[in-house]
Every structure is written in C-alpha cells, then in structure tokens.
Length: 88
Image (cartoon, rainbow, N blue to C red; front, side, top):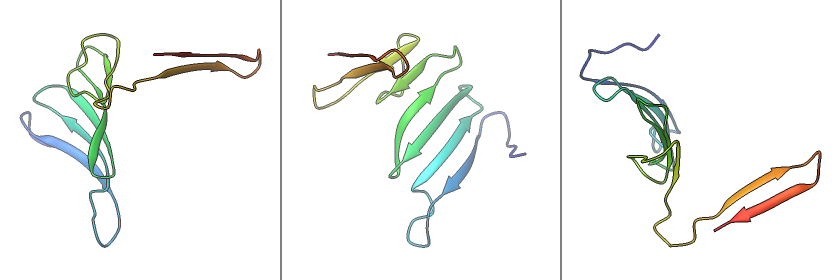
C-alpha cells in the first residue's frame, strides 16, 4: 500500500539512476484523480468521474484527446475482423 494524507499525492516512481521520476503513477487525494507520466511528463489522467484525458489534465468528456501540434488522430482497430479506421 502507498498511503498519504487526504490532501496529498501518493505515487510510484519508475526511473533510473540519472532520473528516478521518468515514469510515474500518481494518485491525487485532493482531486481523486490518477495521472500517468512517461519521459517525466504527464500523458494520461483519469479524473474523479472516470473521464480519461490523453494530452490534457482536465478531460471534458469520457475520452478527451488533446494534441498541441494540431495532429490528434484516433485509430480504432479490430484485428480479428480486419477493421481499421482513423479519425482526425
């Protein structure tokens, strides 16, 4: 168990001897949200309502994808049926 006070963040850090926080999973007790980090940057957040944000820390919908380069693409693939589609 990783436990902290009600207003604190509990987390698991994954990294190497040069940077121990390259990968992290943090649970923020004050906002009831979980954040996933790679390359020392937050990439995915699940908020208290279960909404998932990719590239955003405040998802507005069940799945909210944000890309600062303007090239956000969602790919849905079902390999068993051969279905694959991309949405821009």
